[in-house]
Image (cartoon, rainbow, N blue to C red):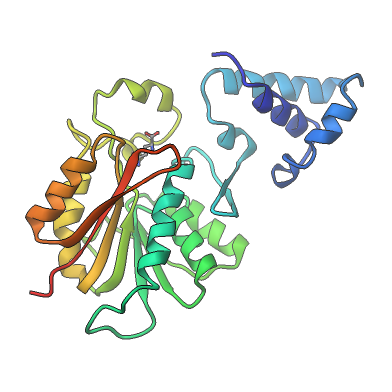
Length: 272
Ligand code: GLN
C-alpha cells in the first residue's frame, strides 16, 4: 500500500523519539529540519515503522495512541482503534442525558457502555459529564486491561466489568450505548481491518447478530423512557430501526456520522 505523507512524517518523528502526544505539534520542526541527516538508529526505527504501516497496521497501533473526543487514549492490537464516526454516538448520548429525565429514576444518571474496548466512549462521557455514573463492560479481559489503564492515566472513574453484553448486568440504566461489531462475516472490507481484533468487528453472516441481541436484551436493563443508542454499519440504519420498532422502542431515529452516513440508531424503552 502507498504511504500517506502525513503518516510518514509522524512515523519519522516517532523514530526520533517524539512522544505520541507531541507528534502533531512537532511536524513544523520536521519541516524546518528537512535537510538534516537522520542518525542511523532513528533511520532503522523509521524503516521498521514504515514496514509495519505498509503492511496495513493502523498508525494508532504503531504510535500506541489515538485521540478520541479530545482525549489521548493508549491503544494496541488488543482493542479496536477508536473511530471519529463514534464521536457521533458520544455527542448524541450527551444530548439525551440533558433532555427530559426518564420516570422512575434515582440520581445520578447512570450510563452503560457495552463492548467498551479501549474505553473510548465511556471515558469520553465521564470526561464530559463528571457527574454521570459510567459503567462499562467487555467480554475481553485484554480489552478491559487497556480500558482500565486509560481510565487510570486520565484520572477518570469508570466502573469496568467483564461480561458478554448484558449477561451479568443486573441493574437498570438511564442510557445504554454500544459500538458493537457490525461487519458481515464475509465482507471484503475485512481485508483492510486484518490487524484489529476480529471479535470487535464481525457479527455473524449479516453483521447484525450482536445488534439484534442487544436491542432485545437492553430493554429490561433500561428505565422506562431511557435510551438505547447503537452504532452500526453505513447501510444498516433501516434494518436497525426496524429491530427497534419490532422490539417496541419509541422515538426511534438515526444520526449521521461526520461523513454523512446514517451511522447510529437509538430509541426509548416503552413504559409498559
Ligand atoms: N467502523 C468500523 C469499520 O468498519 C467497524 C467497527 C465495528 O464493527 N464496530 O471500519
